[in-house]
Image 1 (cartoon, protein in one colour):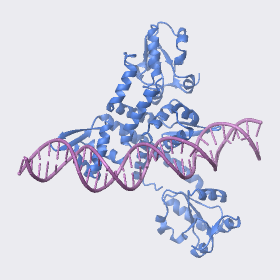
Image 2: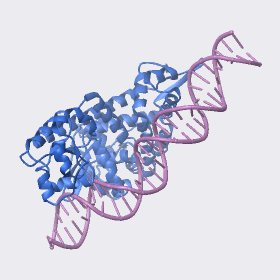
Image 3: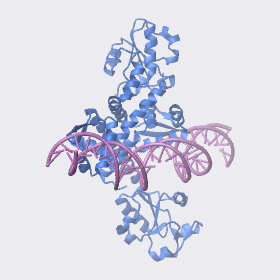
Image 4: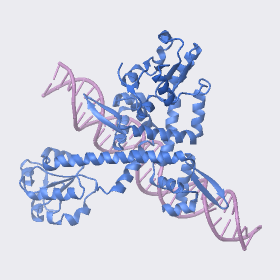
Length: 220
Length: 220
DNA sequence: GCAGTATTCCAGTAATAAATGGAATGTATA
DNA sequence: TATACATTCCATTTATTACTGGAATACTGC
């Protein structure tokens, strides 16, 4: 535990890289980006055993990517700082370009359904300021409650069809969900277009919006 | 449902992350950031064998971070795109924040503990069972020989400084001597902390430990 | 205090990665 | 064509990492 600087930093460097060098852990971080979650919840969402999830989380904590606090008998984890999401964004960017397989997958998921360009943060922010759009969060209500883009309304995907009447008919609709690879948004856009709405999706999801420091809200 | 596609993508993320989760490979990328280089040159600069360097480079290539072209009998590698360096920058930023945070925590931890809070018998016993600590007896050797806490090593106070190398660097150290008012232990703790060790002293000394019926040993 | 629940700790085992030395593949030059 | 040279491929040993199931720990509510 000698505090000799350079070596210390190098160790941390490797620790962080190692921490994100595992699909499960990346998934855990992305889940946490949507809000605080207990170990059990994370284990279920990522389809890991509780023990295993706990170990991954502790590795992430040692690397300084997530923090934990106790709340009753649960331990709630959250992402430590925004720069963690920036790191994942950089990672995704490189991965997308370099690995042909990702292109193929993304293509097959989005290309047919969503030919229109997805919206950037800037554009969404601008249109929100002018109040020109209806913004829909299609994630499950709990995730919406944990945190959402300020100004959004919550309509989980499975409720969309029977709640169409809530939408102003002639106003453009923008949809978002968990992130750039979340198909909920794409499906919602397809459904809305089929009903004649001018619908588009946000290029990425809530975590990235939050990471960019843009306005968010919690609860109802 | 997106999960199958998304899982694939997380795995691809992991592939790229794995490529940078190794000190040698990070070094190779940083060397390549300065320009094209041959395998042999890279091997020499990074002090790897040619074979080993070649394997690392191929892993980097599979992850899409570097590209290779042939020029005469050499193969020249270079960084594929600028975003690779952005990725390393993001990684460094997160790692540095992590270190800073750890330093801060460690600092305050030491500070508030420095004045008070010596270890209880129970706590020492528990940590000894788990083998998590180095236990030092700082009394003169004769007293150690006559009887000491089982599991302790003997380093009289006046030998401590020149025998620091015997201590596992990252393991907490616990010090004890004759009793609660014996200053040897306090001095040893101060010396060890100055060298960066996580050191604490036992609340009281050997006589009380023995009196409590806890495990002891004699001679060597 | 006691039981119940959530999380973490702790082996042991299976899977994966790193390093090494020897052989094979390409490529330029005599 | 033969030869030297740079790189890659392959097989082996060694070291790390991921996962699992059974404890231990920490907290809640009675």
